Length: 509
Ligand code: UN1
Image (cartoon, rainbow, N blue to C red; front, side, top):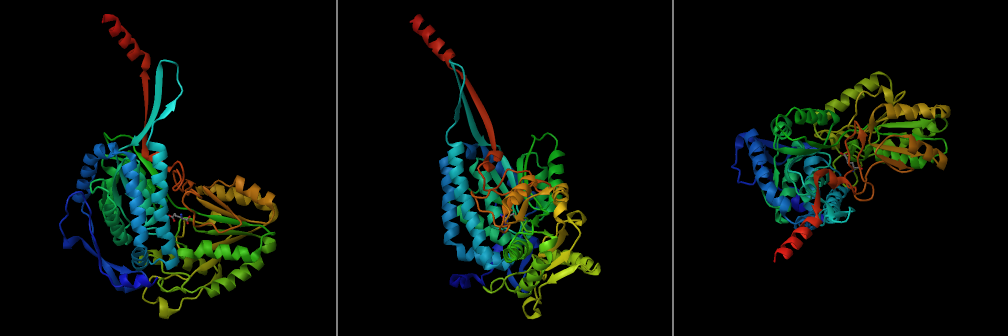
């Protein structure tokens, strides 16, 4: 924490990092300010042009054959050196996550830790999967082997809410599997992405294997989803954007059938029955709904409380929310930082207006203008709703919705959550094990959490990702993730043929 001061006033600059040198272009420069105080400048970003995006794809295309033949051991070793470098630069990366992305310090530590874990986990997994072919059984006189290799050029399109962890996780997975990568970070968090890539180059990643394209969706994103040389896209962000990418990939002419790996939104719920411990429920709800200002796709959006416990939980929740301190994320005492930008704030406040106008406000945290006036803050709030069916869209911020249910209507609640079609995280709280088993096995989601909070999946321990509108899978930080980035080749050899030739030659002699 002390070392963070070294980076508080540093002026950062990001620009396209291509396999060839890119000239400075002031016309493409955007100023970057802090979400907690728009008067504070973090630096500037030179956004990539369409032509640079196309050039990056061409460079990646040219680099693919050589990189795919680079031994996996060398590829994995780069990831491990990158992990070490990110650990050495923890203070700087955390500071930048906070200054540019508005992240709390505690979130910053988790963020860098997760990125480091992704590198080490995928490095280890790639050795298991890619180093040796798998021998398959076959008849005598025949050998069968299955080999994994890279597919081609991957576009990695990542979100601002995990500007180091998800950004890094996507591109190192693609690269270690033998693909070349063109990465487009979120517009809001290009500076920290740029710093991560500089460290990756320092770790030995060739500059034509991973390239960085800071920029916007209409310019950079549209090139990456429409160029026929792109083999696959790995994307984390909204469901709506994933649909746009999917359509663009499908509309390409003369392009190979693409791979889309998408991790998207959620409408995450938690069911609490009457045997749950109210204090523990509230602690887990506050963490799940308001940590990171609710800006996680894993965050809790809809809390279902069984009638007999609802009043008690809401009463304790009101008290807990009144205690939340909202303000500068660099202050260790802050519980909730800003939302990412003005557009996000306006969208959330429009929802707040609507809920308040309908008389649905149940609990609210207080903003202290002295700490929040110059930034994009939204006070955590809880609203009463009748059920998840009434939720029109994912509210990506510190807004919680609470519905009550009667014990004999449990199946209807489960059906309503499943019918919504999202399936990312879900929580159940009860001291009755047959209740938690019943609910957990019927709910269709990617990550179920029992008697705990529903955020903060750990790499290699809780593989993360959803189904339905929430994503394609496979799960990030899970044993199958790299397989989706890989092509499989089966080699069948008629071993008898060579043996036969050999004996014929021998006879000729
Ligand atoms: C996201 O918010 O985009 O479990 C996904 C968690 C994180 C979620 C990341 N791994 O909270």
